[in-house]
Length: 224
Image (tube, rainbow, N blue to C red; front, side):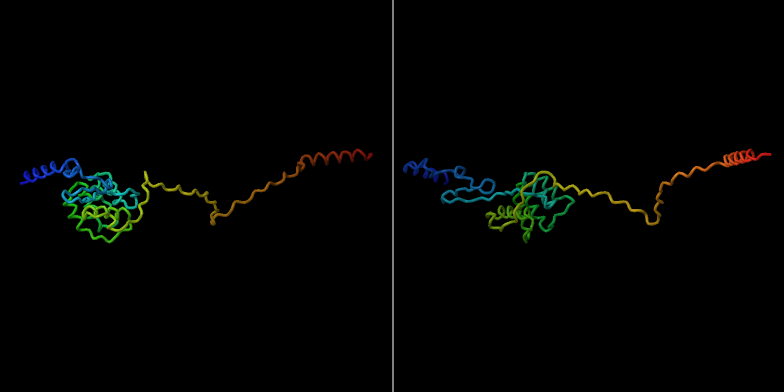
């Protein structure tokens, strides 16, 4: 039946001179990309309409706000599915453990297991998030699972610009050495003041010699 239908259409095409004008374009020729990485549009044969397909994509930003979430997010952006699973299964728990099914669903989607991603995403009870990357991951997953634009799932906090390398910490402020204070139990050392040299005094022998000299002089002055 399909062969006869195609033959009839081809005959009609040749009769009408419509061949080469796009009347019988194949599906692959009608597929165009509207937003690379997020959506593709495909013309539905026989209707003239286009069907948009939403793909998984994540924006860049500083992912150091949350340790486990950030590592998993980075791995998903790089297409490292095993690395994302390893980060998710690490010893550091999520800041919001209730959203672990969301990250697990993203890992399944990274591995192109759409059925497992749908099953895991169904466990997510979205109550919003103040962390931009968790919010963006939810919007990306919801867009793929429900095939609707991200804008249909609210907005997220702005993503800070991505940084390279670990966060720098300022050097500690140098403080001067503390002033040494004397121990209250110890008495201060006495202040030493220079003393004058003692005056030179005559020795005892010198006094006797002087006395003898004086006595001799006196005796010499008395006549016998």
